[in-house]
Length: 159
Image 1 (cartoon, rainbow, N blue to C red):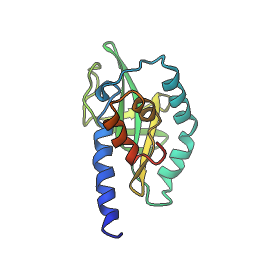
Image 2: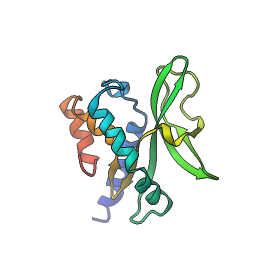
Image 3: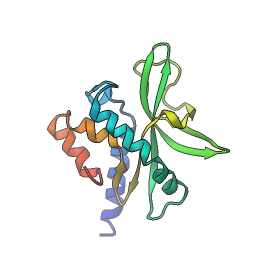
Image 4: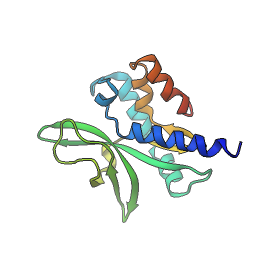
């Protein structure tokens, strides 16, 4: 079992890295901003954001790989990005954009950006090799090819 834990953690980290690099379009699924299921997922993520911040500030059971999904807009459009390595300092939130844009031009992968809390549309972290949160991914899974959805389902805490 001791050897299995590092392997599971490595797998979860690898898949999380892949997921954090995915916008909705990158998964091959674009539901649009007005999709009712996606709106419900975003609402749930926002409603539970205080729980996320509590674990972020005081990890209880080895939680790691914290990430936030944020909305970024410019004159070219609006896109949602996963940002990794989030940090809260002096009432401000910062994170590193983890994927290249498809529409907007004001950010790129690797940019450290300030995040408006109102722009957060999802969150996630890893505990015991399983991903928690990722509510928008759960909606997207219903529209993915079965093998891809199954892969994500295996690493989500509650698919």
